[in-house]
Image 1 (tube, rainbow, N blue to C red):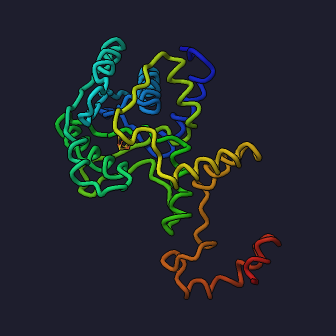
Image 2: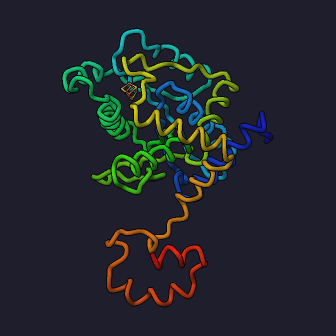
Image 3: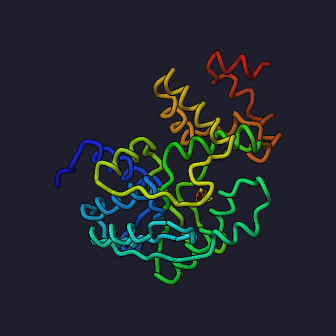
Amino acid sequence: MAYSTPLEARIAKKTTKAIVDFNLIEDGDRVMVGLSGGKDSWALMQTLDTLRRRAPITFSLVAVNVDSGYKDFKHDVIAKTCEERGWEYRIEHTAIGDVMDDLLEANATPCSLCARLRRGVLYRIASELGATKIALGHHLDDFIETLLLNLFFAGALKAMPARLVSDNGEHVVIRPLAYVGEDEARVYTKQVGLPIIGCCCPACGDLSLQRQRVKRLVLDLEREHPGVKQSMLKALGNVMPRHLLDTRLNPSGELRDTVALRLEDEQPSNLIQIRH
Ligand code: SF4
């Protein structure tokens, strides 16, 4: 079965690679897709549905939208679109918006609290629906922006996992669009005629200053040096723990024992770094 467009084929290929690399979807899975109505979650739903029809394994999909309770949120458009496409779905009406108003300090950035509250709702619904995986629409740009945010502002070298088991071991969160770019998700969602819906919260589209800065930085670098984003993606899968300073990864005894051997293996540029 041919794909409708070259973009669809490219996104399907990248998503399949992520699914295989991280064992994201297995035979018999019931995958619950977190469907916010934004471009990324629509792209994820459409892509997984396309792959489902072609996959050599059997899995089912159910879309879940968590309505935070903001006035004017167009959950009816999400419901209608899912019905038209024959997608099983559930809209969960909540009062997350009101809870956020009560809990948030003035001037605090709401998105991380919002994400945690939504995640709690998704876990509960996953249990109710018997979902074996919870798929989220984070894409390549989210991975590298998160990496840089942690590097610059949180003192940690980490992005986000493509597959994560919840603390209680009951849920598996997956991110099948890990290799798909934000621009690809945006164009694809429009191309397949899915309606992009704003969440209607007061902070909608209002990224933190740090995230805005990181987005701009990556954009500028990519313009100057096309391929920077792909290099960062590659770096996430090409970690060399011995070239970092985490003593949990590099116990001092081991370092002493192996340093002479490694010096022999190093490229000249790395030798300079080691000697400094
Ligand atoms: S923009 Fe609004 S709805 Fe989206 S994560 Fe932030 S607080 Fe939540």
